[in-house]
Length: 556
Image (tube, rainbow, N blue to C red; front, top):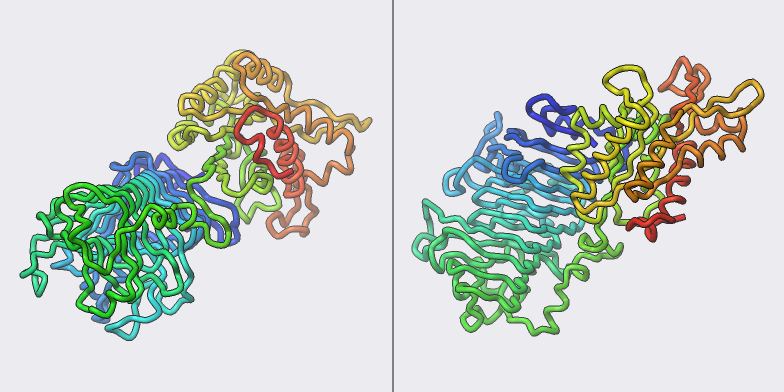
């Protein structure tokens, strides 16, 4: 978990720097928490499994101002697909509580100007705002070939075309001309779709007073469903009867509006053929139970049917987005947050084979459960709070999520920044984790520290954690919090292994054995990949027995 803050209080002051810090070899997920502020950056995200969380939707703003008519130094125009402010091509991408803006202005002046260019699979936008004018949101992939030029330009021109599935939940999307366009299969659930009034109307549209088109789908012929708007509100400041629901960017454009409220700015005929009558026979436009002043079923074009109840069932979110892997962004959504120290934390590639058990827990959970590993080296229950790390976790955690808390290794250290007393301040700090999680409807779980490898001359393992595990257990019993006695469980297993075999758990390397540790290392506290796997399984075995939503979702 990485924090971005303009005031320097996070690991990075720009989002792009945080993204660039993710190693190419990293296959686990990365969560980036972005504090409030206006970040003027042109963002590129090519890593998989990135999750962005803004501190506040309306006050965490990513903005840039490129546009189609802007020119490169060689005189060539940016055109549509270089104009984006925010670009994503990494699969399994999620973003929450952010505003994405293209600040360049009206398309009648600057041309197309994308707020977001999203060309990836299994993409989720939750509680976000996307703000621009013409071509606000492009949902890739590109069509097979351009119509007017030799190339599309932009970051994906010439790449293999991969189908994308997107889910937009409770978002606000604003624009005017074709402001949601592309080839992806995308569900817009409970979104506000805002159609802007255009200040300048030029060309043939001026006589018809057309202020915009909400969609311009380019759905491939072999893809059954393109855009689905479910329970959305179509709002705006465009004049009455001045906005179309969509027009076909390509022949087989597919767009459905299911139980959406439509304002009076929607044209009674609903759909436009883009001056290509032949596309009326190939487009797949439809509605079901539209309502509001812009809903005019009896006046819609004849080639965009009104669905029956049975036909509308085909546009259920789970069916539309399932694909071959059964993806459903609505089902069983749960996030497991980890707060802890270095024995829990993930590590960059250059530190491997050193690894905390939290980095391996995902392999023991059912698919669809997300892990946010906020554990950080050297922290105690106190310093984790003092540095604002608990606040970051609690800002993101939601009802039904789980918070796993393991501290103790550093609470006994003598320095004032980390020191707590087992039966007083240690319990007091842990109580803040419990109460914070419960206040958000989440499930806290306390986990005592993994044992250190310290054998005496007789091969007897020594307990180095003093009274901290017992103090945690007492607090868990008092507050009725699930408790994993990892200290006892790992201690017993390590004692069984003995001094020699237990080395396999820890970061012990001879000089020259690993390029990350050229001088070798003898570490009896920090796990290696084998140890991380083993201890993660010890934790998972206990979680399967405890009263949390994880109990029935372990893979053991």
